Length: 167
Ligand SMILES: [Zn+2]
Image (cartoon, rainbow, N blue to C red; front, side, top):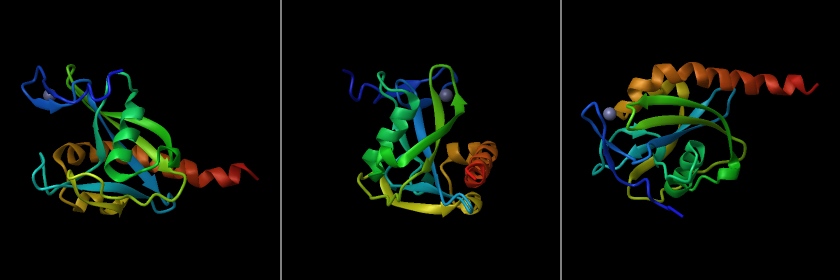
């Protein structure tokens, strides 16, 4: 067992210091796909990039897949039931060889009411996808957002088409 063995800093070869000895993952959780909303976390003031909005997520443990790490962090930080999330895609947001960050795109398949469970968050909120760029975002999410939008659009369109396919 290696619970929590991902917790720690990594000095990558590009001279940054990153959290997550085995990399990190964030859950990009969507709901209401006809007009999609995404679950965002307002990072507490004392944290790195505090006062900015980001995704729930964190360090991956060595025994976990990237998706498992994202779902575990979402449960620990926001009380998101993993059974309420259908993971549909993964997208690498940053790959610095010694460390990487992956976005796990999921759809809420049940009612998800996020709860503040850690001191790392000041707020948790469902935000209209179209309003996300207007918020003060964590720099990682801000720089990745434009590359994430096509995937979000595809997920929303696919889900919207699903009922027709069942006719
Ligand atoms: Zn780096």
